[in-house]
Image 1 (cartoon, one colour):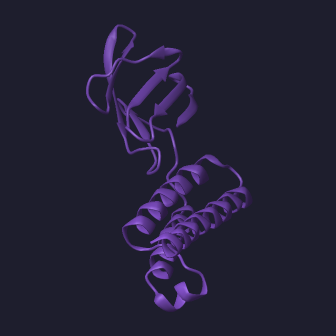
Image 2 (cartoon, helix red, strand yellow):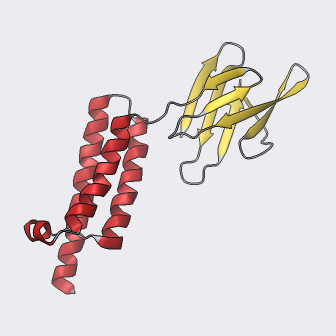
Image 3 (tube, one colour):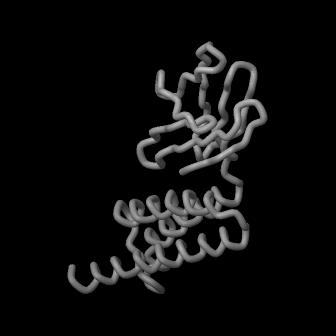
Length: 163
């Protein structure tokens, strides 16, 4: 995930965070900063070395602390992005473990359904965070929801036929 912010004193700040590994890179005014610790980078400014601390993450909202300056790099997830992502997991969890509901439409539950829906929930949160307009975020959620339910249904039908 990349974020770019313009600051009056420091110029163009580019923040890059790997979604899967959490590895971070920080570039200020075209200069890639060397990493001192996991979340601390060193900025050489006017002959002195300044420590740049990054607090938070892409999903929780990342902020850069340089001396007394606090620069917001990314915003945190909105409440509806989190709710929509949780709904994917909860729907599969409840439907897949109810025999009455599975008689209507079988959905794989348990560890397989939980793993698929948890992956889909995280992927949905990641996807919704990158989209700017709310209606497109909700459209992305609906597509992810339908794909997840359909995939869990196909796996359940496979189990019913062959096992």
